Length: 297
Image (tube, rainbow, N blue to C red; front, side, top):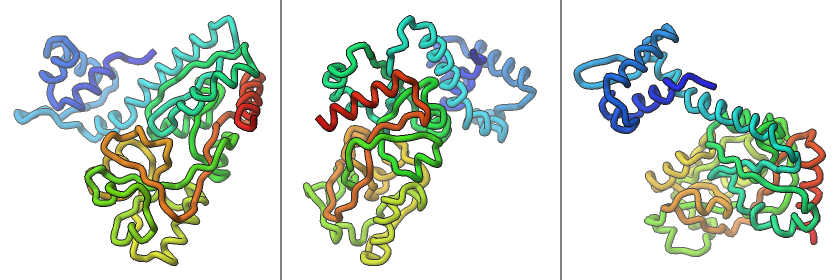
């Protein structure tokens, strides 16, 4: 599906040397070098600067490195789509799962859901949290992935060109390092955040978060807001490494083992539910009706 030399390129870029990459790939260093040379030749690009101190990505190499994980994953997803198309039964719900969109809520609901639609089976489709995947997967729900469980609002649904079914309202909480002084508490008052750096998603990501942001700016200027652009593991790493406080929800409690998620006495919530195509298939519609009955029942 894709040039397998891209896997070698990715390994070399992350290892910083041909020898280390060879050890990870279980091939000889000359074989690694040959693959990189062939890749550069086929692309007509110089991807690495070779010096006696090691390897460094060129600007072209840096650009390719930013995209290559997505390219590889997209090709793997294409194979998954082809395999799914070969299935005799069309009654399979493909549930996307990632650290930010855990499928546990659907796993917990599944026995009850099957009482309403016993013919439907489910398949977990893991994916990596990247901005590219967020755009591609949510804009193309129904192709490789049918539903994703996560937080959302109308702004996000419009931006991502999909639809959503609300299952619950999740309290907006805060995540802190287990070594942070606030980790000793089981619940936070807003005043506990005075003097802290609070990481919030940039404005216009969610109007629920923007309401919280405006409240803090107006009534609690002692809290320093730090904007960031995307929820992924690196955001959780930043929270842990820099001693920040990160806006989070309870469903993310397993994303990072060194973070503790604490409820806050500020009364703000955000919708949590299932993201799906604006034009779902008959099977997905049946599944969504079953989930709705299960939640209400």
